Every structure is written in structure tokens, then in C-alpha cells.
Length: 283
Image (cartoon, rainbow, N blue to C red; front, top):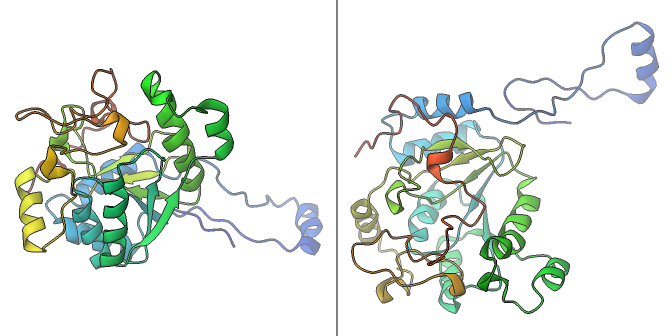
């Protein structure tokens, strides 16, 4: 059988009956190979969940199946415990994808293991292709002269291959993190390829104060590097401490004209992001 979203119909045709169908000049049903979702679908969903809490939204997304097969992509970074806890309360079976680049802080790997055990997560640990590393980053120093290329090998390519199995992903991005994320909607179209997957940002309109309060309320363990001055944590060579008053993500790729690793686009560049206020904060 073939699963089709948004009412597109497909059938299984018995091989022996195929010639009979053709002889009667019937048009054989074809699978629509176009994008799974369109920008108008994202706008519709943003409006559908206007004014509804994050928990209500997540419950509806999972129980009503409006986004198809979903995976959560987590960096197990500074505030990852919040989204992972929220989702685990609704659906503990959802695949949680971690891009194990080989460049993470040891503290991040230990934090990943702690949260997986505590929340009972369905972890998928993705690593880059050995051949790609050998051919394009044999000495492991590509980050120092080509951070985009390093991210492409270690993050973009492995995730692109894995995401072919899914219709949508969940990310932990927040609008307050930087000026390139302040237009972040709850629902958007993934522009990393032409598949038209949906990208869901449950924490898009959460503030830092709300995140801190949630951590306290649910007694969630903090990432050990946060108290050392790392409010946004990625791979160790490209993550620096952040001074007071700076954007939380200003320590990522410091000194480079780079704001995302490649698996996300800056929110200001998202097409058709105008949703008539559907993503205005509700808190």
C-alpha cells in the first residue's frame, strides 16, 4: 500500500489485471510525486493553532496525524530538555535524531545519554559517512577554514538521507535566540530540499523566562556547559562563550558570516512567513 497525504489517492493494481485495464482505455492511477506540503499548508496550520498552547498543538499533531510521519531533530544543547520533555509526555515513540558529528563536547554526549534514559527517548544516532570524512575532511580541520563545508559533511548530508523517511520534523528553535530567528513561525516548509516536508517549531514563541520556569517546574537537568557561559551549544570547535547582553547564538561560528549550520534557514528568509499574526506570542 502507498500512504498519501492531503487526500491524494493511489491504488495497488494486480499485474494480471493491468492489460485488461489498459484495453478499456482507463487511466491508471498515478502517485503524486510532488511536494508533501505547500506554503499555504503551513499558513493554514499556523492559523489553526493560533492561541492554543504548545501542549495542545503537539497532542493534536500526533493524535490527528496532520503532519504524517514525524521525527524530532535535537542537538541535546542548552535548552533541549524542554522540548524533549514536552514531546515525551505526548508521544514517547517518536524518533529523536541526534547528529553525532564527531566534534561535540564530551558534556553534550553525556547530557544526551542522561536525557535519553530519563525520558525514555527513541534515539537515532546519526554519524557522517566514513567515505565523506576521509575524502573531504581527512585531517578533521575543515571547520577551521570552511565551516559550511564541515557542517554539510557532518550534519546536512546525514540528516538529508535520514529525513527521506519522514513527512515532517520537529525542531527546538526559538524566536528570541537571534535576530535571524525572530520571525520564526510554529509551522514552516523545510527548504533544505524539494520534498516539501513540514518543519514544526513548538517553542517558536517561548521566551527565555518561560523556558527557565519550565525547567524549574519539571526539575529538568541543565546542560552542564550553560553555567560556564555557553547559552547555545553546537560542535566544540565552533562554539564560544557569550558575553552578557549578546544574542544567545552569538557564540556560534564567531568571526564567520554564518548563522545556521545548514539544516535550518534563517527565519527572515522563510518565504510566505506572513500569517496575519498567527504566530504572535500568546503568553
